[in-house]
Length: 568
Image (cartoon, rainbow, N blue to C red; front, side, top):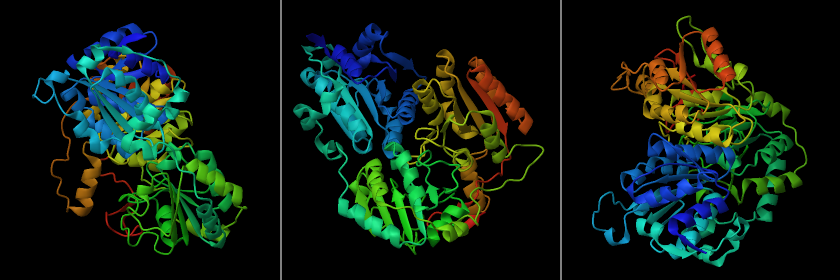
């Protein structure tokens, strides 16, 4: 049937079972939005306050649901405003499709109004991207984009469509989603992403070798990385950990891949890892990392990292092997499939003495109580007591992020949504809104700091207008806390441009958007506010006052041995 490019786009979204998109209109994408008007009964559009907020919302939706998140924007500054969100999704392997429109074909390359080469700009931060010049290719490009975004190692894909393509007509032939991966034209379009189209089948010999290494080990240790979460391999990982009876350290991106409250959990690993995690990695004889890329925040000094152990890396992406840490053995494959094969081959092990040693070290830091301000443990403790155990937590980046990862326990993939790789301040509120729309039956909280909240508080307008019940909890210490901590410990107390001795009043700000808010300084006040926020089921902001010099503990400086704690 004959359709315009804009109609083809809508139909392709329906093919992919897309029910919500996040975006911001503009001149070059107006044909698409005009057609979206006719599809509003089938596709919900969330108009955010800023394109970056839309990008994070699509990302949060994707991470929390496992589906592909979709974001749309216009050309020029509209598309470039997406780049931080695209990079955030890329670094954390989040399945997202970004759809933008560019100027007409006859204006390309002429510095036309709001023209920009967004495919060139985004090439290093996307799994794949396309510039669509021919309406006859539009449907296949969109189908390829969704296939690429969610297959193999997931990631963002950008589709840039010329404005004239959205108005031109073509013969649209519907295609069931199940047929997309098998279609020849789509495989040809996938180009450089085709290697990641399908996860490779693990080599049986590699799996058998790891089984032998496990049986010979007396002090095994596991790292649960983001690949366990992205691959929804949490059940298989839990069975594997129990079978080999090994302590489990969890990376920032691995939150929810293994039960945070398990008796095998040592807590976070790396720069702000628990003493139990870091000491165990340093003392183990076999370290098995699943879906972990050994970033500089985990393996602070690659040369001394797990220096007594044989290191094994399990990853879907061959390029991650030996990239940051030289390993003794590796298995390429999807985490779920590799773990299934291992569980079929491993008989139950027992390592009581080793676990006793590991858990002789603290798995969480302890904090002193003050009568004038709250401390991190009081805030996270109140969250655990008041809110349901399956509450989804979206964070921004900084001290509050680490406290939320250290002290809250996550039990399923998508429960923790945080920017681990790119470290994006301003990520949290948009991500929380996307997560809530994707999970309407679960409570969603946004944990942030006063510095980060300044960067995304404009999305309170989105939260209020669409009546999205997200609870924002601000760790308000009047400073850029993590940077101040580094200035304290490493820069001789030179507090240059980190003190936030200025507005706004977050309570009044929230109320100006029609959102209820409270400022709290005591545990009782916090618990009352949290209970009220959850009971009312509306958007809510809780401004928690903490001390300006409160620190994330433990801390190991970048480039040092993982056990060289400078803050305990």
